[in-house]
Length: 418
Image (cartoon, rainbow, N blue to C red; front, side, top):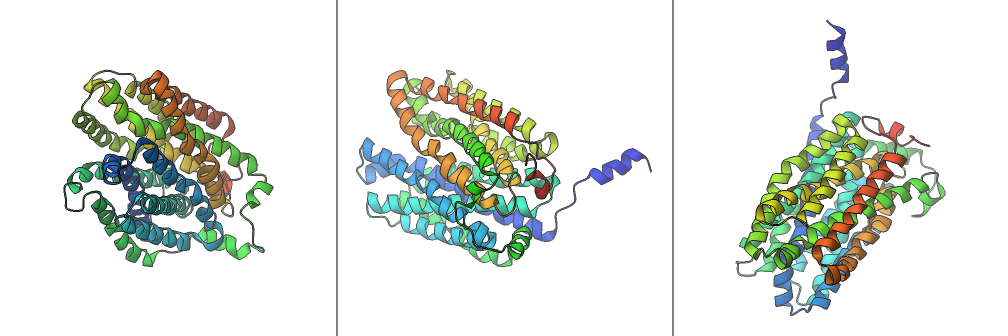
């Protein structure tokens, strides 16, 4: 047998076990509803405004308050390093299910906003816990692919939501059915989780742990600077990706003359075409590495946003939107991988909580106000195009400050640079 064949066999990734395949499906389906929930709110804003008789100020305040739930998820995510991944994942799925279901009965703006804030809090905590689970339970050579596919199911949820909401709105209970329908698969997941095991890495870490820690423990460790760098990268990227997808329909209708139907068709086409690219992004990270993959994804996404807010005509706008949506979905596997791989098991969930849910989400929550203020003066196109500097700066931080973690075991990757 030749040396080349032997080397190929040694380098081949180990196959997933039956339990890993089951966990893969479970986490993918659970994450699917993150995309569904986020798309549902943006799709329902016109109906909610009419049903609850909201003015522009009330509607903006509602969205901002609901988005604040992504920051409150910090309190839950941090518990994963104390209670365990399995226990917290169960709590967040149950919490999201109940909050979503009761949203359909909301009689007024205050109740609707409060329930959706809770749903968003549980949902983001579930997403972060899923990423930690995936990083700890799958082999290093396949970790990027697994995290990428799980995250891509969020994009798939958004696509499905965009397709079914117009149909659901024509039913008897209108927008309320969007929230009733959204919990059915999660009820199934609540039963499917019975075969779920606790992360073996977490169990080993707990066995060696000698004392309880506060939520602020990570700031007394050598990893505090790394948390700040990750928060900076998350925040810079969110400023672009969050606003690019939120305001595109408003831009093309008011500044490019597309009808509501044309804008909806463009979003649907672009989302469907971008899906294979988003699903392939995780595999790309395993093949060419985290940092090279980040170059491809961040620059492609930034160029897509520039085109999506600068092109003219249905075809060019839709073509550019494909890559803008790709960037908005594919950057997540990159940062999910880095956030999971750059910290030890005892700090991994805390790093997610501080880096993403607290510090990284501040620009996510506040930037829409700045975009709206700027758009009133210079237009939606230039206002959003300026945000593309965010992913470019984030990429520079990744290339300069982050070590390459591809195909390394978590114990090795978390110690790089320390």
